[in-house]
Length: 210
Image (cartoon, rainbow, N blue to C red; front, side):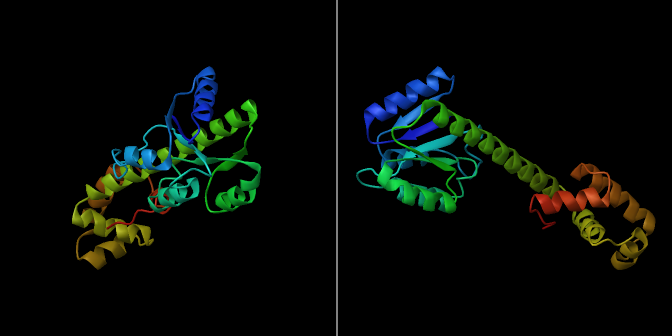
């Protein structure tokens, strides 16, 4: 889905037509406040957007500006899953460049080239898909960690510290055989086959053992 926030109806209509001609769905909003009101109905904490999406956002609008809306999206941690492409007039290019340095995906000058704009939208949607994939993986890892027993977490912590089973057994006051059982169950729940794979999984997705 491509979201369009621009105060000019003719621009929104032109963008919607262009995207429709390229088989892309879009939804338009006349100002930043309308988009924010709609955004308040989304389950962001639950992972919205859960399908590739991006936002075409006008820099200058009456009321809340595009830059102010962008800053709020940054605060809500949304711009990875909802990349922002600014639509700018010539005089707004330096402002748009500064926004890109702060995390905006790109900017396009009005009047824009249809092909260039669609190319950037496609890249933004691809980036969104990758970010959503990473979030789902993090959520999956977090759920797996939450399902571990306390003892399995104890074993996991020592496994990622690189301790062999004998030292884990000594540290926890249990037998090596018991460590082996907990280790096997923990590996199964985490869907890994080795300590290296486990460590890489937790490092990549920023998940501790809690």
